[in-house]
Every structure is written in C-alpha cells, then in structure tokens.
Image (tube, rainbow, N blue to C red):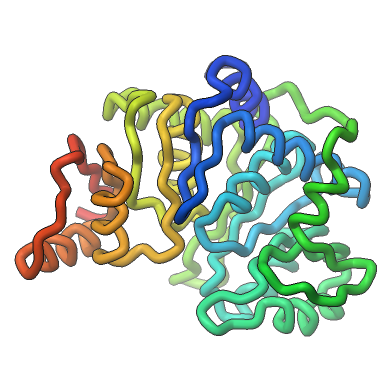
Length: 296
C-alpha cells in the first residue's frame, strides 16, 4: 500500500483483480471493478455539482454498498469523508455537520422508522455550508435543485472526467468523531496513509486472504469498520459481507448464508452469539478465525 491513496488502492485492485467479489449485501454482489466504476461515476457527478478537493462530504448511511462507493468517490475527488452514525440524535448530527463544514451529505431516505429526508430538510436551512443532499432509497420523490438521488448521480456521472485527487497519502482524508463522553465530540483527522496502514497491519496480522469472506462489520462509520473492514478487505483482495443490522442472529445467519471465514466483532456480540448457539444449531463450520476488538 506504500504510496497509495484510498482511491488509487481501489483502482489498483480493480485493475489487477477486476472480477473478484468485493462487497456482498443481501442478494447483491459487487466486484472490485464494479465498485471502482461506481465510485468514478459518483466522483464525476459530485465534481460537476461543485464538490472540490478539501471539501467535506458527510456519509449518514448504514453499512451498505452505497457507503463504500461514497468513501471511494470522496477519495478520488480529494475530498474529506465524514462518516456519521445514522442513529445519532438530530442535535448531535447537526453539531457534527456544522463542525465538519460538510458541503454535501449522502444519507439513507428511511432507516429504523426515521425519515432522514425530513430530518435534513429541517437541518439544511440551519447549515449554510451544506449545499447538497444525496439520498439512497427506493422512493420516487420530487426533489429541489439541491437534493439528488444516488442512482441518478451514478447515471449522470458515468463516463465523465473530473479533476484528479491528491497523489500524496499524507493528505487528510477522513474526519471521524469521538463519542463525546467528556464534552463535545472531537473530530479526529486521519490521512489516506493512516487508514491504509491500519488496514494493511490488520490484514497482514490475521493473514487475510483473497478467498476469505469477512462478516461482523456493521458500523462503517467507525474507524475499525472503515480501516480493518472495508480497506483491509480491499488490500487483501477479500470479500466483505455488509450487514445493515449487527445483532447475533443476523451475523450468525450471514456466516451460514455466505460461508464466511473471518468474523470481526466486539465482545458483547460474541457473547450473544454463543448464547444463541446454545439454543439453536447454526452452521459456522466455514469460520477459520474470529477477531475480537473494542473492549477486553
């Protein structure tokens, strides 16, 4: 990964290993080349709107392919990605959007009975920096000239050129917020090199391989999900199963359904899974490794 940015790391993998599976989400499978193509299209569309290198792009999405595509699109533009937990209360979300000076937010239309379109329509007048909203969902809604559907932008940007991203891995790439337990959440700045180094270190230490299928990543807005999960899988050429719900039943079900070989998780998840496995049989024989993180 030496000398690579997040954007060029994907481009390199998409060139060397285009057809291999990268992301699995419900019944969908995306190859490295498909994620690269969509990221290029989204980057071109965002550039056409006026998003430039150094601008902050907030991502308020559950773990889904659009999250990954948005991360790589921002990387290709040289923009700063601001991944935010979609379960944040509105005041916290407003604070982080203002603090990061996000010019664009990419959000889910509806999640856990929360109408994010309505939430952002209320927030945007209070956030003068926030110029554009991109929505992910099935609704065929009428939007104003500042709100766009994700799929429409992919179509609009397909095949279009845009300004190149920085070639320097030391450039700032991500702004991740702390939980704010001792005051206001703090924005932690990370470079392309920071995240790729963490990703490569994890992948190397656990021996992640191209034939691995990884489960347990449900929080891509967290540094572990972003680095070890999304980028670690990319650097190893492994396949990542994205889970919008991160509970024990959903994760064990994904192990069985996808034949997962590597399981990331926090202690409470593994405890819940062990309890569930005592109650009913789930085939977890495909697993070769479980990696526990986040707490002792």
